[in-house]
Each structure stands twice: as C-alpha cells, then as structure tokens.
Length: 270
Image (cartoon, rainbow, N blue to C red; front, side):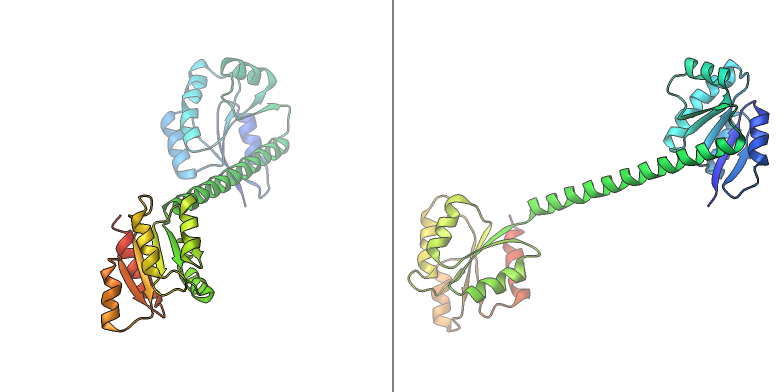
C-alpha cells in the first residue's frame, strides 16, 4: 500500500528528494501554489497528506496556505510543513496550530518519509477508533430507543407452561412479565405499569372475569386493555366472555400469528 503525498512550496530540494526516494511506500505528486491547481489535485489525487515544502516563502503564499487549510480540514487531510528550522519556526510563529505536523531539516528524505507515514498511520488508527466509538454509541442509542418504544405485556395464567410459551413468543417484540395468579398480577400492578394484559379466563380461586372486575374498579388499572385467553369454544360461553367487554379474546392453544396480530391491532391504536 502506498501513501499518497501532494507536495507544494518553494523548497524544490525537499520536493526533488521526495521524488528521488525509490521505494514502494509513497506516491508523490507536486502542484503549484495556485489555489485552482491545489484544489484540482486535492480532488482528483486524494492525497493522504498535503506537504508544504517551505523555503523563504512569501507572505502571499503563506496566507494562501492558511486559507487552504480549511479545505484540507474538511477532507480530513493533514497539513505537513517541511523546511529548514528557521523557516518552520517563522511559519509556526506566524500561524500557530495551523500545521498538523512540522518536520525540520536536516532530516533526510527517508526520515521525513518515515515520520509522515507514522503520522498518517496514527491518524488512521484514531479515526478508526473514533468511528468504532461512534458506531457503538449509535447502536446503544438505537437499542435504548427501541427499548423505550417497546410495549409491555403482562401475562396472567395459572399454567407455568403457558406463561413460558407466550413469553417466548413475545420476547423479541415486547417486554413481557408473567403472573401465575390474579392476586400476583394485582400486586405487580401496584408498583409497575403495563400496556396490555393477556388474562386467562379460567383459573382456580380467582378466575379471569373476577380479575377483570378488579382491574376495572381500580382507577389506576381500569383503562389497561385486556385480552382473554380461553379454551372455551362453546358459542354461549364465548358470549359470556365477550359480555365482560375485554378488548379481545384468543382461543387456546395460542397461535403465534394471531397473538401478534391481536396485540398490534390494540397497541398500535394508542
């Protein structure tokens, strides 16, 4: 892999030395100090670093480079200033914090090459880490957003097997809590909220209708949608189920598609 360097400035010795290096590490290209030339080479060559090779630069050329730095920053291309110690010191004094990397002669061309490559590699590593952190942050934000948007379902049934089956069916799309009796469900609702209750119609001690009556009599729970789960298939008894005015009912064994459809039809209205 070659590192592409775009070179400009009045220090022809440095520029010639960079072109004289015979290895497979860098690919140098030179450009004039004309804004149009630098911009064109920047666009089409897409260098890994822009090298300002200075030697008795004019105020005009230095000011032009300071302005050009804004374009380099937008493209995340570092500005490397190369030249004699006195010229580099003058440049930094006139334009503090403009150069990303300053390399002073008498560094050899090979040493300059090594320093530039090391700096580019460092920038790439930092960019990779930054992008990974940004990706991770976005993933965490998206996960938090999805979690906040997930509806909560409370499943009430005296069968542990049924509770597990329904929870497994819903866990990818909903936050699910379970209660093995109406009493436990009411205790749960004293401290936590839910968006919908799947309620077994036939339970020992306290059946579904009794639990629903308690829910409707409590201001804190009266508006929670309830879907009955029932094994009743007799039409007359189904009418008794519907007379309780639940938001729906599902026949056991519960079919996954019908369950998801019933939940969506109610929760998506909210």
